Length: 501
Image (cartoon, helix red, strand yellow):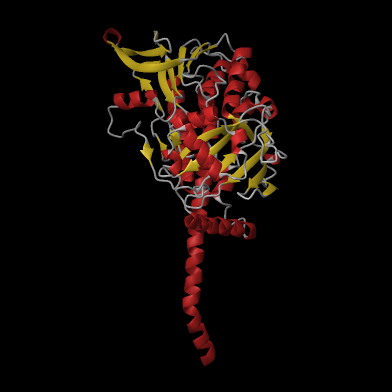
């Protein structure tokens, strides 16, 4: 196993190459740290946001960093800092508040107490944790350029040498342009990755390696918006109860029709002075998307949640911002089968993709950031095995990661897609299947695996291993059902022959 000490002192013949990372989110900053600790020295990160801890209400969702994501934080000594900024999953309490004001608080059970503790942390706090590590220990290796967006990537042929070089153009918010000529280009720029789109144009094969392959999911197409509420906001009109930062809340609305029914979901925060993000997730035809002004939002939210003192906790400017915000859509589960690109006859030049640039899906299973951090961990192992030689490391990374990526997308389709109450009957049928698998696993643990959603939380299992176990259990369930049906069909014959003999 690679250690933090060995990483810090490592340097190879490739370490002084120019590295350009497009995207300064968790995957991008984690990759920069990984390369720096491997001894790479000329690393630049392009990030379009103005700061690492920039607050965007519609991007203010929480991460649950589980054991899979902690492979990275453990390797680079950040897990202790992560824990101090987070709410541990072992202390996850949920309060459900009904329209009549009644409340019920319960502790959400831990699936397996033996597994590593997972941590709830806001996105911007986690990104800032990575950035502060760069500023504190690796600023002589890594330069992060904020307010900078990648515009264009070109492959310039050098005929005399039968080779090529990369030219990348970026633009800052003051419209000034900068040209980079990296040896190693890393795409961590999300679902609409300009790096992947460029590779798709360059790809001359018929395999469509860099085309995102999309699959259906019951939660795909749902829309979400975030309502920003003040810290410790009041939970009742008498102002006796206030929200606790480390508590999760499910606030149920009074409307019952599908196009008006609404709930507010709030996840826990460690910092009691930080605004609370109330997540709203609905079908695209919900009335909330037709509200065009702050007054309309204010009135609708007030009617939907009579148990809350909306006039005290929702400001008109926030209602205006909410009305103007387009929110977002849950994407179809999708992946790219191409994870890298190499230049002919140039063993020290290459392009690699990580995170949402190669796999993206709705947040049903909480694996977006965890799978991205695991991508970085796997790339690190590939570089270690190849002594940082890109022509060997990048194909190895793809061969190790692509099977897991395919399995991850399938798990995103089936593991927990009905949790948003978008179809109560289908959710009920799915829940029966979920409970049935859980009971069979308790009765015959060596024959039937737990539900896939539970297995995902076991970081010692790869996504591919989880998918194989889930499929095997499905096959055995089919055989069990067929055996029961066959038994019922044969029952009259057994009775008949019993009477004869």
